[in-house]
Image (tube, rainbow, N blue to C red):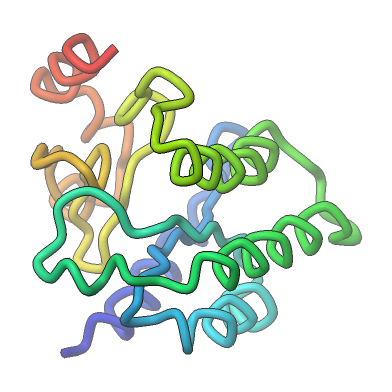
Length: 173
């Protein structure tokens, strides 16, 4: 309970960070539990919060395997909508992160369809997951935990400077 409000609070705090190497985006995971509600959530994040959003597909270890019973065609339509919105956004400078966020769902779809890894893993090196409580993890498929961003005064550089993060990056790549 309260996870959505905590996420909004975290987004508000992170929106205050400004810098050429920081781009705030929201990522969520498409699953059987939220597939009916994720498009309105996407529109809220995009239109009301004015933050780009990425939608990943549930995978890896899950508490309940039923979470993976998704309408895959619906997922692909939704990521196409996100892609089109991102490509046609007016007044927004496109970045390398935009390209990654457009290509990632395509790679995920291809991985699911072919049941084969498409690229080497770059978890924790090129991207990470920020959970609603501030916890930072490299990937939803792994059990590793980097720490809580709030414990580092929302300073991602300090969090990523930890030896355990550097060791993880060396191990995974």
